[in-house]
Length: 400
Image 1 (cartoon, helix red, strand yellow):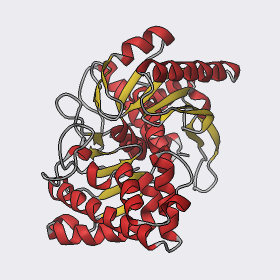
Image 2 (cartoon, one colour):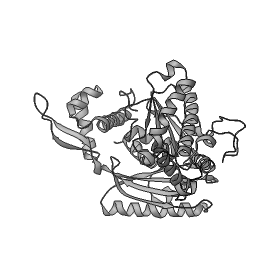
Image 3 (cartoon, rainbow, N blue to C red):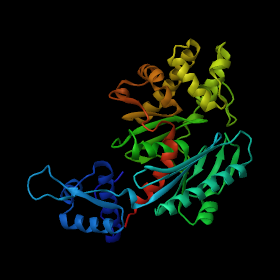
Image 4 (tube, one colour):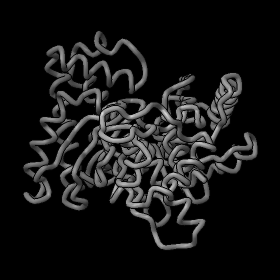
């Protein structure tokens, strides 16, 4: 995400170099000033000057003297957890979640409110705003400086204008969330599509660290994906890239929430998996004892692991169709890694072998060579931690 220093105006170069220092510490701390100079390719005096600024800003701190190297020991440096905090918000058809985290994404406070389908848009936004106020109060009580609010939303998100343009699962159109919340809370507000946010979260905090090219495929109430190329999210011209769930796999298939037929989501979405299980199993009423597609999906996963043949068949079919779609994406993007996130990560033991076999059948040989398919380390929290990552990424790109 951060390369060698660019040739530009001195202020721009200094900001870039400070971002590179933070990036190295995020991935490899503890490091001394000498270690940083060697890794980045700058002289010691320049690195020492940048470190002094970052220490003054409270973004990094000195930890202890290095004792495992010859010569004069240097003080080790690391990201300061108290360097600031971020509010992460996730909104989907199931409800609203809010996290307050420190500067290294440790959760300080969290809350979730479940909402039923069909609740008015203002009910969702009012709940989210009240929870954000509670998070900000917690930050004030604990003496933490709030850096901003990150929001993960379903559907088409215009990241440049800060607007949710269209969310099929919520039936929302043209919500100017950044303007509304920046005015209400007086803080930077960054919004992103669920799956893109989750992909960024994987790059920052998960299995995608140090992997410059990977695909993220995840599911909450709906399914989608994010694409990381050369350490950057691929957002496309209008910021709408990554709508993988609406890639047509069966033109004569079921109607999707977006109004089209045969979208990938209609074959592998959590709601569709639950419906398939209900149709196939005579024990569905006993297995699915909680409401909501997400809860029911998790129960089907557990049933499959316990030997329920109908549940196992549904999971394997989902894995097959996931593999077909992923194989197409592998042929296009040639990633090093495919991360299976959200609720799909719950089923990884059952579906990843099926996905790998399907990719083998439907992708070109050079593309699948050394390709890894792995579950997200953050599981169902990956989107909301991605919302946190939006704030931390924004701060780390312009730390001075």
